[in-house]
Length: 417
Image (cartoon, rainbow, N blue to C red; front, side, top):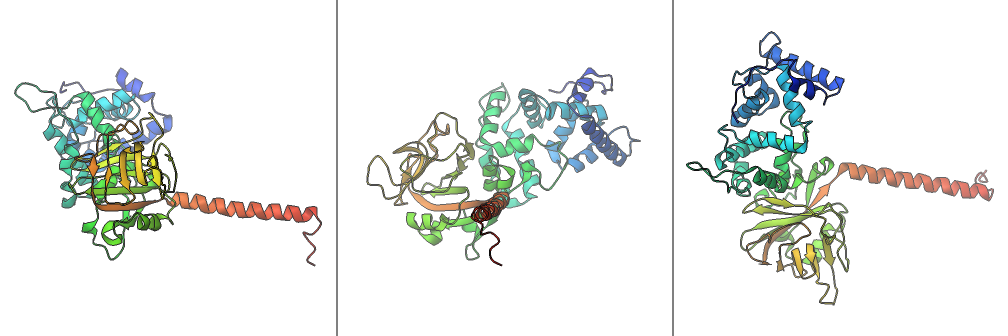
């Protein structure tokens, strides 16, 4: 991974090839950015220094150093040229999926020793959490559970276990928030960058935030599978410690909220897991929902499982059915009586099995679960609310036009004089 190269010039074929991936406007913007940063580097407009590069992109420590190393083609001369920037962004942002993931895989080897080990990954996760949560020590407690979701099976004699490229790709699949972050490091800093956005969690005044299952790092993890407009605000709709373990209360509390919801369960074994319901919880006698649903784990490790397309058994909500073939309760995936995740209408028991709907394993320690705490959050989409308002406004105007047209037909539209 650490071959040295001579500085790149504009005659380098890699620069010529990379340049073709950008529009003229994009190249001009990159040139302006380079000129600004090179001026700050006091290099007479020739190079960008490591300190200026890391300060601008807000990536510091081992991860920032490794990113600078890769962008400068691993020359070790601490000089980033305009050609370097174009080649790196051409590969990292404009390349094929394989090229981008190969770049990220190399990036994670912060030690630069050719081995992606557990210590490398831990250093990267610490850097990510520092960047997103601004050094909040409480969030650092979650680094371990993100790390524990990784698999290290490749062994090299005399070294620590390391992660193969395929294991890295699998890890990115179940941690889309991490993948988004690692794939956007050369995007100019902006408070609204998609890979950094954490939903604002709105809860009742009479509830202690330490009692809530949904911590901000968990919200960031779950949000990795959602669109930008779904990451603005999430509001607490139901908490069993305050509302009781009651299916009817649960349905009553969420009945006025028509948007998507995030359901989280803590069972008596201490495991945390749940599901994202893209459709409202409504009485059905069969599966419903769409391919936006997914399951997730939060403790003792984190993972997210999106639909595989194997079937459309996504959401389940059965109320007051008398048939054994239609179990009353709420669930996700699998099949009736053998769900990916299910809570019975008694809210005191349920189950979780591996299921092909989401390609998910059993989410808890055992298949049979006994909930200790249940939470449900409503996803607030201001854009969706605005669209709904505009649609309602439009329907009223259209109805008014239709009424006027009908009155005109019968000669009564202007008969009030």
